[in-house]
Length: 122
Image 1 (cartoon, rainbow, N blue to C red):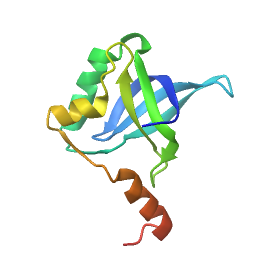
Image 2 (cartoon, rainbow, N blue to C red):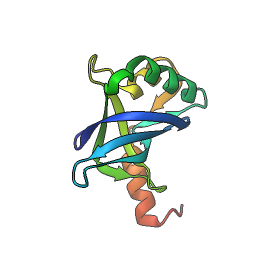
Image 3 (cartoon, helix red, strand yellow):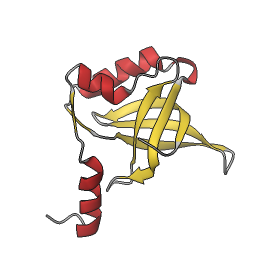
């Protein structure tokens, strides 16, 4: 992914593919909360617990970076992104795929653009 990245604090996983985070927005010099849907993966329900475990191991002392593609959003307004451990470089979505609770979704952005163009109609 290319685009924006910032250090975040994870508040909690709200769904198997969605994380509630807190991040600093320099333009307004304030912390904001945002929902992030994991980019490029289709998650199973078990992924929510795996996300919590990964964050517990990697998320100490704000060591997580949110990596996004220019704050692209899905149809629910959630930012598409991934989390990266600043120390090890490990990506959350890679971990979820490796342990078998998520599958790669290479056409995620294309699906979202199609949905935007058609207004959500098939």
